[in-house]
Image (cartoon, rainbow, N blue to C red; front, top):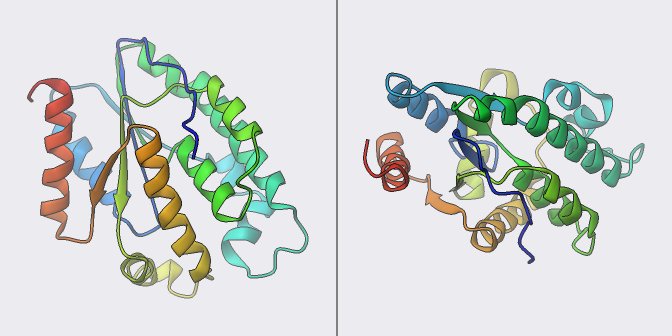
Length: 212
C-alpha cells in the first residue's frame, strides 16, 4: 500500500475528513462535531462525491444493482476522482482560504479504497491524481464490523431493500484500515455507543488544536 501524495494544506483553514463503510457513523459524528464547533469556529459541511456523480446512471447502477455489466468500474472511479479534484480545488479550497473549518463526509481516500477493493491494486493513476488535492489536516477512519454497518444501513427506511455486496464490504473494511495506516489517518472504532465514539473524535480534535 503506497501513501497518497496529496498537497499540504497551507491555508488558514482546517480540513477534516471522515471515511469508512456506509453505516460506520460518519453522518452522526459530523453532525455532533458541527454542533460542538460551530459556536467557536466558522464551520462548513460538505460531502464527496457530489450530486454530479451520485445522480449519474453509472453511480446508481453500482449502488443499487448487482448487474454491473454495462460499465467498466474504472470509468466510475475516474469520474469520481475528477469530481473530487473539482470539488476540492473549486469549492473546498476557497473556503479554507477564508479560514473556515471544512468537514467532509468522505474524501479521496474513499476513491482509492473502492478501486482497490474491486481488485485494481496496480493502478497508478489514482496516486498521480492525488497530487492535485489537498491533504486533510485530520483524517478520521471509522471502523466497524461489516455486520453492524449493514444492519445500520438496513435500519434506514429508504435503504432497507438496497442491494449490498457483502463480499465487497469486507474488502472495503480492510482497505480503509490499510489506507488509514499508510496515510497518517486516525482509526476509530465506532462499534460502541454514539457517546463513546464521539469522545474519541473530539479528543483527537482537541489534540490537534491544543485544546478547545
